[in-house]
Image 1 (spheres, rainbow, N blue to C red):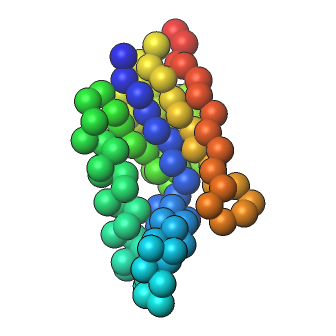
Image 2: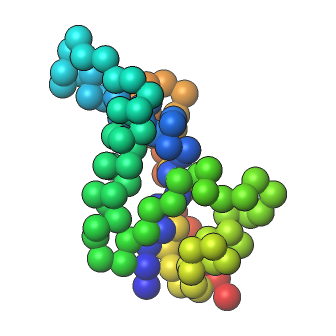
Length: 103
């Protein structure tokens, strides 16, 4: 079984990662290109885990349910777990919903 992490769009993910890093590196500024690199680095690090696939929201068609899009576009199969991550309303706040693909 595989695990698919469905993350927010890269620009938003990069923005939130940069905000987190602001606490570690006060005074540094993170331009759009750097925020994009941060999002890619985080997604890439997670995807190196065995049987883990990272999909950012903008990779899914707007008019298709995530279940169908993951099956058709990314090879998800029945029994695979999906961790759908959402950014909360406040900085640093995240929520996740876990579900399994069914037949």
